[in-house]
Amino acid sequence: MNREGAPGKSPEEMYIQQKVRVLLMLRKMGSNLTASEEEFLRTYAGVVNSQLSQLPQHSIDQGESRASGQPHPS
Image (cartoon, rainbow, N blue to C red; front, side, top):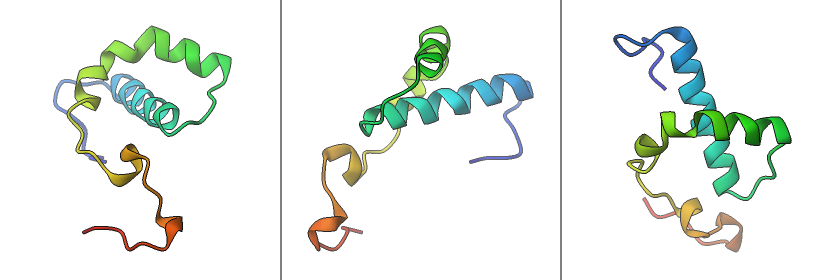
């Protein structure tokens, strides 16, 4: 992650954005979120939802697993 910060964003805004991204990715990977995490997402998900959709797709997003013994495509 870029630690230098985004111009015009407060540390609190950057924290919220990063927390939303992490929670959305955890949910997408099948993790069960706590009630407080779900509430946080309901409150702030719109902050980064459009940015998250622009992330590149990775093999984990497509349900593939490295445990199958197959090498990870580069």
